[in-house]
Length: 472
Image (cartoon, rainbow, N blue to C red; front, side, top):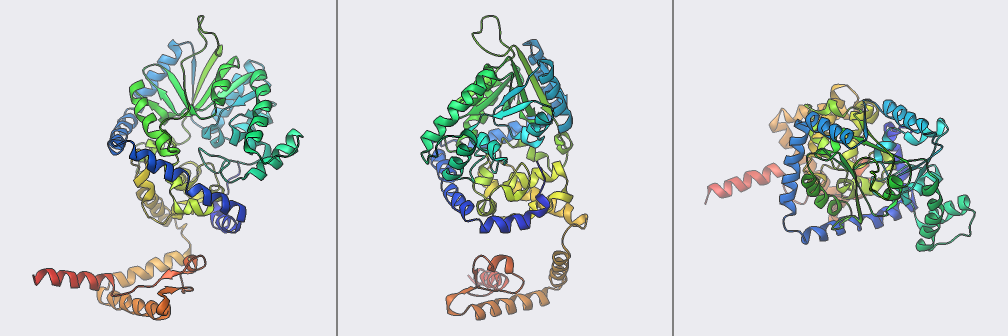
């Protein structure tokens, strides 16, 4: 996947002018967030579960080596194999080797953001192995040569007409705008792929150390067919997904669906524990788990360690005003939204992703809805600090900060400037109380009016409040 994160500003401008994208995003804004809010109302202990999940994740990260080794031991005991991969290239080579060992020509795939992270599909195709995405959204995107714009609803940026056109072009069938008919059409095509696939590749939402199990959660059932019908099942996942016990896994499952889509539980929650046993009616003959690091171990002990708590629920982007305005593709790589603004610089470097930590209103909603309480605004500020230290910040911003610092160090001058600015904005706003154009604030007023201050400065109001309390 090509990295366009350095072009975030231009990507965002294009996204804001894309009428179809804006229509798709307008519907999205009132879907997942509303469903999540309703789900929380039905679970009084939701906040308590947040704290338990945060504490458990912290414990896991602090003992990650122990739990990963326990997981590996159990997988081997169950007849499977574990492959440790430091980089995406290592993971791609490992998966290709497994495919070549069984002479695989076709591979079915469940939805996996980690496989997007390492560009697995491109790698397999370049080596004469044909991957077929089986998640409906991912399948549509693969036909279009597109990439996910959301981590749980990958084709959220498309409409029914887009899908109809794509299916007509590739399936050579009559066009239809009936979603049920389109789904049935995809099902008929993919059934043949499930049956003929030599290898099935899935991701994993969690890895269970005590049993050596992997689990995927889906709403379509494609993951089950992907991992049970082929003779070889490969799980590609990252090292922070491990949990100690099945009971611990159940804690995260209670949070995951509610935070993601507002469901009580996803439709399919499928555990895989090694290859097919003699008494099993179906399942793979070979079971492989590919554990990817790709910079995650370097986050341990750093100021970004808390990001490893992420369970990929997408709640942060579902509630983010920036993501809601520009969509996922504007972020320019695999992980969009607030979680991507923290994770992406770790993986591709702040030099290429410097815009992303700044793509935030700092409203704090992402932290508020995170099921494992990741302080995303704080972590984005850490990246902004590193950006500034490396002199990656645009000169206009650096001069602006230097100007602000000049006045901030001189309280009397700062107060005078604040009062003058308040008077100026209130005057030009007039009776309407809002400003259509404001110097140095074009990024705001190009898209919306600026509310004008209606009274005194904050400092004057604070001083007046203190005097009133003292006089009581």
